[in-house]
Amino acid sequence: MKLTAISLLLAALISPALHAADKELNLYSARHYQTDEALYANFTKQTGIKINRIEAKEDELLERIRNEGAYSPADVFLTVDAARLAKADELGLFAPVKSKLLESRIPANLRTDDWFAFSTRARALIYNKDTVKPEDLRNYEDLADPKFKNQVCSRSGSHPYNLSLLSALIAQHGEQKAEAWAKGVFANFARPAKGGDTDQIKAVAAGECGVAISNTYYLVRLMRSNKPEDRAVVEKVGVIWPNQASQGVHINISGGGMLKTAPNKGAAVKFLEYLASDEAQVYFADGNNESPVVPTVKTNNAALAALGKFKADPLPIGTLAKNATLAQKIYDRVGWR
Image (cartoon, rainbow, N blue to C red):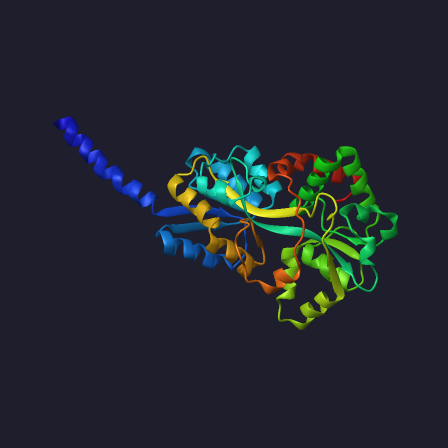
């Protein structure tokens, strides 16, 4: 009887804690978009699960999770780009997620066993309409052609966006050819690598360079802007979907996964599944200018749709992740820093 009474007492004490855990989610996010507020609010409204969010740069969050160790309260880690997600995976932070819903809605090349893409951004070529002929610029490989000497603008080679692009080229062409490409592009720089993708687009519009690589997210944001100066930038540049006759356009992703030490695993899986729902997918596109990963989702972003359809590179995001370290070494060797 005493044992039974003690057991009942323990159950009474533990049960509320378990129930409370089911009603909250601790999210560590490196996505810094105010528009995500509605995304999270909708999840709470649908499920009753409260989101406790910590936002910081991905390196800071990863270091925090490592330092917290087995006692980390983090349930889900979200960030942008396969290279960054791969870093978390290499640290052994993610737990495998078995979900028929995620497997059925997210294409196989946009997920791994441990983490998933929830939105994409094509890495397009942006050119100056007055100085560059679009027929001369059909592929990423063309950026290394001497005809574009002093014409290329780029952000740092160490940025995950460029690491993932070179990772794809390594997978498609091998290390030697990929390095030759990076060396050739670097030789064509109009200025040292600096700034973000928006800075590259503006530099192209200003005539500081003839061509740059940019995620479509940044261009669509300018297209939807009401500022006259942003409209002027858009009018001066053109967009090319590269490699349409070969592998297709390189795709960047935004994604995440559940942490091994997650105290609220049930809530974590629900949240990941929610991000693959029609509602969340439409929000990524209409609210934040990203493309949905679920093929059947219809969006209402006129600017994004105006860019037109394209053939996307089907390379698995896991492959991009594996080549990221080698890509960084190549960029360092050629001086693209």
